[in-house]
Image 1: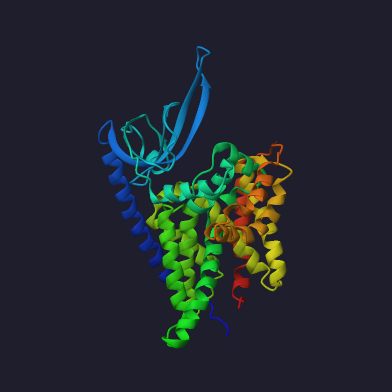
Image 2: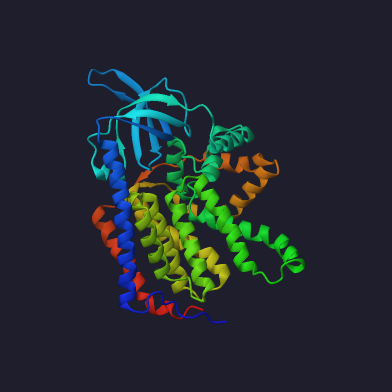
Length: 412
């Protein structure tokens, strides 16, 4: 059956009505954020409750030549704003814990409030009761003897940030995107849930409710499960983008439209930014949008290519086109970096298998593979792209969307 042409907006009027509605939602969202900002900065100091996202030690040399060691905390408040503060070297390890503190943020700008800012603080109370995420992280730590292995699995399952040294190593290896949970992981989980749900559902459907649609019911179950997981992880930007795209894609597909369209990506980005304007300042969100954009370009231009070759060539395509952005932002490169293409393909099998092994009590069976990867010693090569080149590259990338408009219409 050939799908109908995807025409989300039949006339310019419908398109402008959509933009107007999104503009209204964005305005209302910004007013809420601004009201929260005014409440935070009404006085010189304020009491907030936050979660510690990152915690690491830093050593500096003072003007008098003395060495000073202290800790830097990255926190996310209940209202959603991100801020940094410092604590003494004696402050206990509490990453993932909730904390109540007094912060002095009376002079920050609205831009700083929306992106992130540094402030001095005073600890009032450190919550001792572990959260559900901390309990899961504690379970993962009991399954592995090596701390680095524990960190990797905690990053994969609970979106816990890696320590700085391990994060830098993975950046040199070109696999930071694999350990930072994203839409790719959500896609693997969706496929896994789809196949796990299929057999028991079909068995029950044939006996009790043959009139029900497996397509609709499986989507409801899977999307509900993924939504709970998204909320559990506190809605990371790339994962939020993928979830919204999943919902929009199913709605369009269920109504006979093609979902492989730049309009789908555009619709997703606009809706997310309208409801969550803070994501304008999220680097992870824009990298996620860019990755999906390049995937769409590949699938549109090479739609007639065999599935096997698409599976092999797609990681190469995405790696090559995302590399300039990576070099502009991070500037990290090594001779191992291109091998991330192979590791990305292998990861599609590694990720679901690792989940299975943790569930059945064989969590450490793949540890040797990860230890081998960690023990690689990439020599850093400084390759940095200037902002002029980056702007030109973005414009060239966007031009690919206009060249493929006629191609989109022929997808079946």
